[in-house]
Image 1 (cartoon, one colour):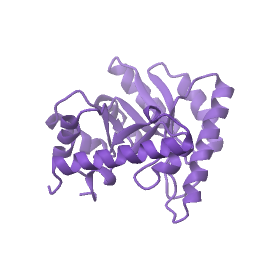
Image 2 (tube, helix red, strand yellow):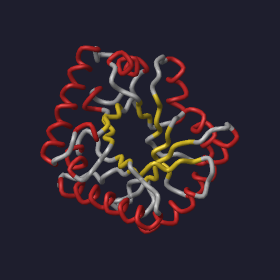
Image 3 (cartoon, helix red, strand yellow):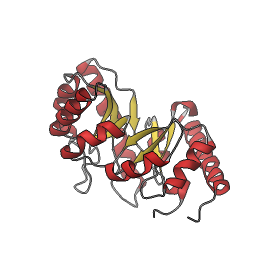
Image 4 (cartoon, one colour):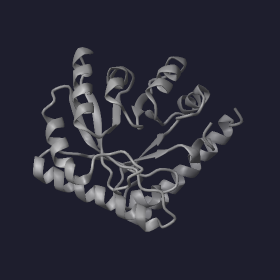
Length: 232
């Protein structure tokens, strides 16, 4: 592994400064935006860097199996969050490994996670992943299906719906990401009015588009390459 702890710390400072600048432009308090280090495809050593650095409460992983291999190797009190696509047949493992699942995008996964969390005697935090950019290459429920998905999620006793997540389409036009994030925020506001349930978390924005996400109300940015370098 070529990344050193010193270099990682410099990257954290740079990303935090970028978040602060984006918040200042948007007239927001930077304390409103959480930085989630995304350690997918990186060795367990980088998670040790996150623990050693301090100031982080969680890390994000894309795959259940990868987290299953890494988590026993890492100490500390970090929460682990699943940000990658989840198949229903991995729900039991995911419910046992992660404190929050950000990528719930269909009813079958909701039901499987609720059953698994119930068997484990816990309530599991989830975000509903919405394909707000309507990109056929991305996972996520279609915006028009979000009300029904939320209504079902709110009826499940072992899940706690904390908000929404999206991934913007890949594009050289920054307006594409801006529109995607604005659409998710508007959808969140409409869902809160409709269901009377608070959805405080808006997980949107990554290394390349976090500025646009913060401008549109993101409360959590998922950053990997800007902290750790190219994926392994």
